[in-house]
Image 1: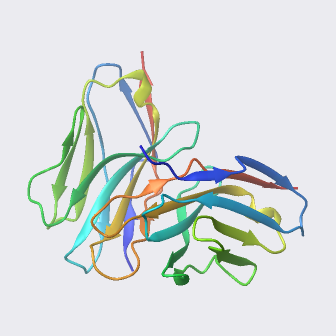
Image 2: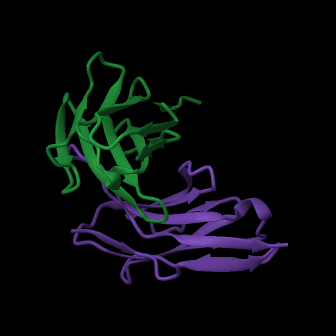
Length: 113
Length: 117
């Protein structure tokens, strides 16, 4: 069964550093998402991406965040200058269209120290 | 804005028994989907079951079934013959229906299910 692949599985970074989280969605999917889950809390929507542009972003997704689909296969989330509160599990997900369900990646655990 | 409420932060059940996890939601839309996701300690998000709002019949997947009450905006998950492997965090989630350019999920806060041997 097709999978959404996320790398790395765990990343530790210094506060103020830039990080890039990478995702390879399922090839025939059209809609791409990043979600965040702070430890012990609920999963929160960050951003949706369709037709090579952001279709919606949450209040969390401020100027420090950006997304890109540079080559038609990878889908990346960049955090420009990480803060301690960015420590969380980040999930990438994709969906083919509204009739289908999500496929989630296994997540990247980001630890900011 | 849509909201999803899970009023039970924690639940426990004896192995082989049945447990029901509660979820309510609020929306003004008529076309939407509801989901239950399981998150084991590995933190992977695993789809358990989904329900289309236009379907009156409650969804069932093996030992998992839902009680979907559209008028009451209630969507509970019943786990029958509970197994040790069912122990996990369970999230209820809402998504708008097909059409448009965004199908973001809105999650509840989760219910931590413990299964006692």
